[in-house]
Length: 64
Image (cartoon, rainbow, N blue to C red; front, side, top):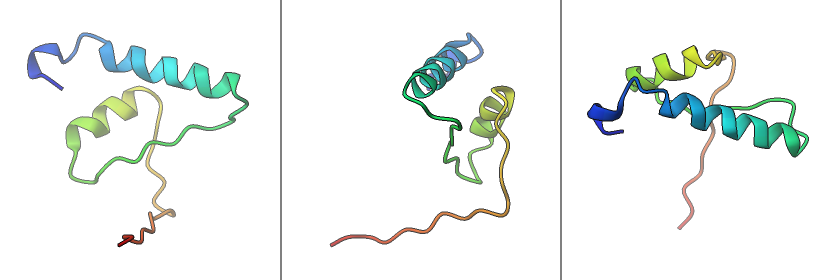
C-alpha cells in the first residue's frame, strides 16, 4: 500500500467488507495468509481481530 494512504482505515473497510461477504455466503471463519516477515501486515490483521495459529503450517507444491 502507498505509505501516504496508510492509517486512513482503507484496509479495515476492505477486511470488513470481505468478512461480511464471506458470512453471507455461509462462511463461519475467515483466514489470512500473512508472511512472518510482514510486520506491517501483522499489525493490520491483529487490529482486525485476527491472530496467528502456531499449530498450523502452510503446505505447498509448485506445479510445473
